[in-house]
Length: 310
Length: 288
Image 1 (cartoon, chains in turn cyan, green):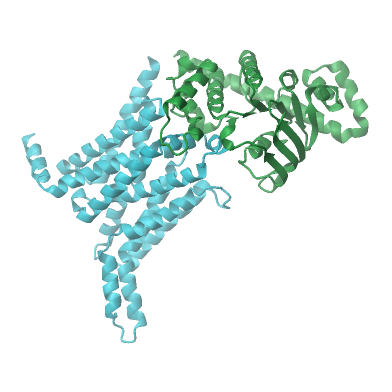
Image 2: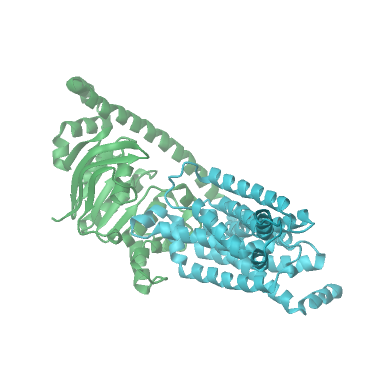
């Protein structure tokens, strides 16, 4: 026991570990907030689809400097990369990946949740198409333009999250903090509208509420959350972070507000426990958090059944 | 009486398919309009088009001196709502949303309005209960209370009594009648001809692809279509047998009227059977 405490206090003596924990908790809080809406609107799968798009975008961001250098080398007569282009490519490589990932994911979210479902290819098929497509292209890009010798390691950490939250850069932490605060503020300010649009879209539209606008807002915030959570749990496990806490809360609680509050609490606790457990047992952060979520879901299922009986 | 909704030669459709055309009617302040017609004749589409949820394909539907914020709507229940975790109060309060304007939260006057409407419909004591655990009649009352929060002038109801037992149906009709007496214009889609002629002031009857009748209830009762529809609905065989013979000259019309009635009756019976099953299932669960 004292060994565990020693290990923890050793880790937490570093400020960046403390920051990482705070960011992890904030991400968990954000992702649980919209989870309820996404589950109830039957959009759970869209979170999954968007996370694959984010994977594709992430690979693109990683290999872009390499691509630029190769193209420049091919175009220039001497076969060498011009100085300006090299500097530009290095600048992209140094910049935060989120600058490329965020806009692409946002675009995909808007396309998938776009108002007016007149598209020829609908709903689940469109999601499946876009998600599998970007997964394939992302993997292909990473193999064709390798940025490091350890391709499978790179792919694995993009899919399942960094093996340790400690590898988060300070820039990531700051960006996460800003985005998390934005998501929470938006959610609180538009809480009543989000409820109305989730419960009954046509009633909201008929009584003069701009439901399409709020749907778009939900799409944008979902994309934000996915890009945020990608740093923590990786793109394959994001939907777990979004849907598990809300599904757990729905087993037991009966009003919208209590479900939201409960799912936020569950999500934050699971994330905290998961991060600490991952430090102690040297397991990957993402999968440890999701495992904690699964255990809580099972507990809530049983509690719900017992409450119904009595 | 001021005109509120004016519909002129409107054509309604669904993804390049025309469901009804040549709809021509007006609704004035304080009217109680009942829209009758077979399944698939475009009744619900008409309601949605009036509300502006769907565009008019041709012709026009205009609101006179009305804004969306003065309209209440009782839609048919959707699948999503059946297992939605929300308390009665939250749902009723969401009807007030269009009145909040730019404020992010509900003020105390809107909370009072929601409370008043819950009391009006006798669901005040349910306000903390979960919507998905209520009976069909109670759920319908909750949605009606929400519609009342939004409605100050016009209330549109899309088959409000579906799935309710006869007593709950009567209660709901009486309630709507009271609202109408209080000055709210009612537009209701219904399968129930008897209730329509009992409560409505005006009838709009839509047939296959066209409008069969629009006018006051008295005129409808005296019209050929009104009579034949009422007779077949009530299963009065003596006259019902006569009717097709008389109508031989206008066979297509008669077919248009009778076939749907049979279809509607069949569908209603099947629906009742299914909902019966579901209800008993639910009751069993509750008893546990």
